[in-house]
Image: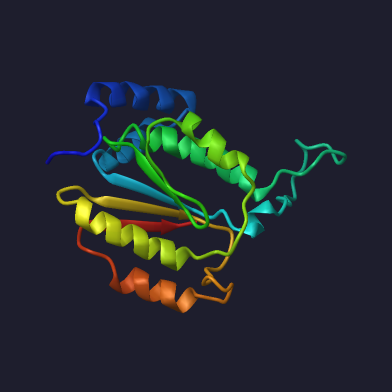
Length: 189
């Protein structure tokens, strides 16, 4: 299959994968399981709605001063996505595609440093997960061909439509009915 974007050579991706496994002290058994995702088209759908401005309230605040600003959900998402992008881009030959709910996507991301500008803008808007998931499935259905698709959705709340009304029933229908055989997994956290 011809790819419209340059593929990162397998040797470079394996070296990157090895370095990430070492950096984050990932168990070798888990690293072998991650290798099962080699060659997948990996897509992240990220919640950039207004609720992501909320502070993270954790029972264990031992690492934070009571006088400092609490980290926000957006900060936590940025941290987690940075790790996921570095790891996933070592497995996806043309880079990770990142779709947001209220801003333009970042396509073919191969390094977490490419996220800084997008994450520097604060989150704002509703939580239209269903609309974005349908968009992603329609785009990828035509392009995946012989590759499997892995979609990871990171959100802090219920899906809403553009008016802010609950959209969970529609999301459930999409998850049950809109998947194509090549769309192997959709994880929501």
